[in-house]
Length: 174
Image (tube, rainbow, N blue to C red; front, side, top):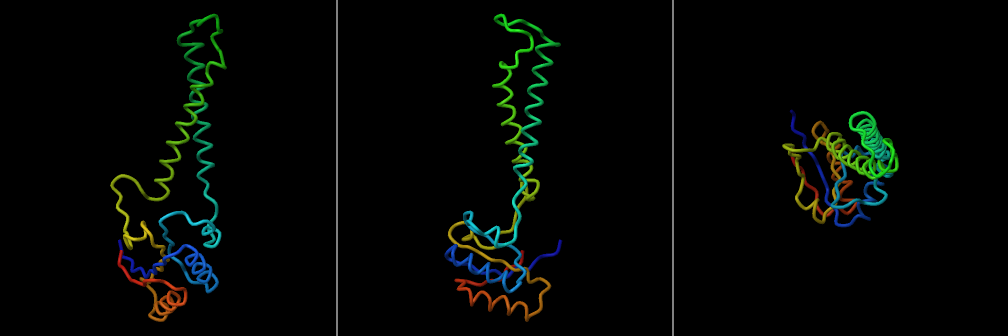
């Protein structure tokens, strides 16, 4: 795997970061990624990112959990072990509701966590490179991949950082 050379600028405030990202998009600069210690409201539309489809996967996983619970209880109480409890019929749908709800939530939550980690390339044993330790604490970052960029492009990025009030500009190979 080839190492990337990343030029990044650190910002002290999310408002300054939003203005810098808008300016980068207006100048058609190719942003590799933007990092922040917390979600910044309004950043996704500025970056041109579409809405996540994780909620659709959660719905599918929830429906699988609902069907699993309902069909399993139907099979158990009508075919495998048909016992009348307190005068209720074998197939008592209202009695199935609590377990069906719990399995719906369980399947949806576990399925969404596994999907999230799989899509983002995270999980046990995966080490992701860190540009700067302060990004997860109190700094905001815009990063550009300059591995195959000309010196003029790198200078354009550095000028961009100086114009947008970046507190620091650094290069790191990851």
